[in-house]
Image 1 (cartoon, one colour):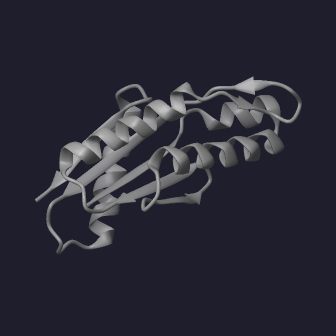
Image 2 (cartoon, helix red, strand yellow):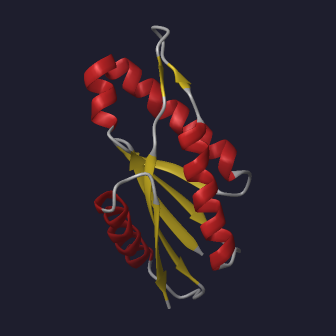
Length: 134
């Protein structure tokens, strides 16, 4: 299984420039892009602010990594149209933890994914950082 934790890079710049209504629109579009790119049977959720998570089961590490990169690329390549006719593009930084174990606490997955997420931010954003839990 894998937990991916991520946010919209520089989201505050969008709300500062276009306002909170535009920010809400970007959050909605971001979620819809993730949901479509992840496909059926994948749990996608928003955890507050501009933070999101994707939970995968039944895939090996390579498949999970490929999915994470697919999600990142789907966000990066999308154009979002705002209510006032403007358009924006966003990127996302993602931390992903993978484990082949079926005996792991969700809190541990979250902590590891969150740490990897901050690694993506520190390395320049718009990337996936992978951690593995044995």
